[in-house]
Image (cartoon, rainbow, N blue to C red; front, side, top):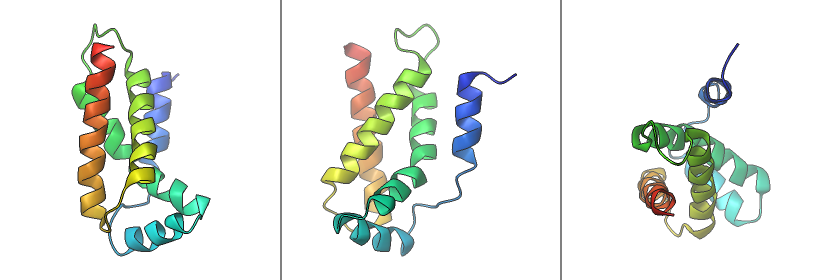
Length: 110
């Protein structure tokens, strides 16, 4: 029987969307035009990134459980997309990493 974390991770790892150009640029334009599916696709393409950042930053014994940290990271991902003014996948991923790490730091001190 899988733990909730193992179940989540296996589901996330099965997503085969790559946050790369030109796919990203096209989906970003569609998202900015109000396409909710494009927004969800972009976020889905970065869930592995958030998961990896959470696993790197979380420590056993932390006051925040890993799944809660992942949830906060995913919220930061959604906010980052809503506020993103750039154009490329590489730039978006850099901003996601920055914003997710900042959220993790905020959660750790809350």
